[in-house]
Image 1 (tube, rainbow, N blue to C red):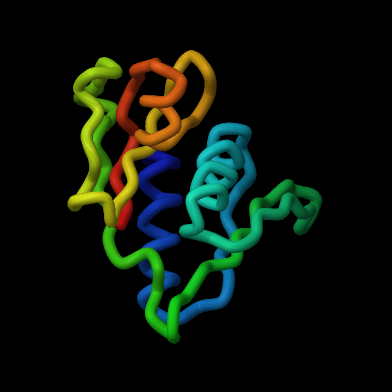
Image 2 (image 1 turned 180 degrees about the vertical axis):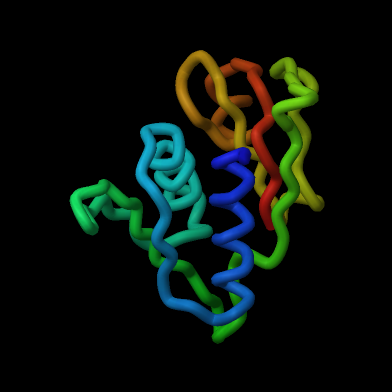
Length: 128
């Protein structure tokens, strides 16, 4: 099972169901992705907690006028097919209303940050 796909689908389903927060198993990659989404305003809070002797990541979701900020997600790179973008190939997602999340040599970055840093990388997923 792809843990990143599982994470973003859980975020989407919880936001569409009107949940306040989501909890999933902790990993450094998930933490970096959550911090990137927090920086872009898609989630409001990220915290690492211990439940039943295992670390978990608790994420509080963001709503605008009771409408979820996250309505759809799309996994770009899969385990069977990796997709890489050069810096010049990075474009806006849904005319600027979405976000592309990349794994770059400088860490997990959004498409906008990657263009500022002038790096490309593996496209993980799109979110809007």
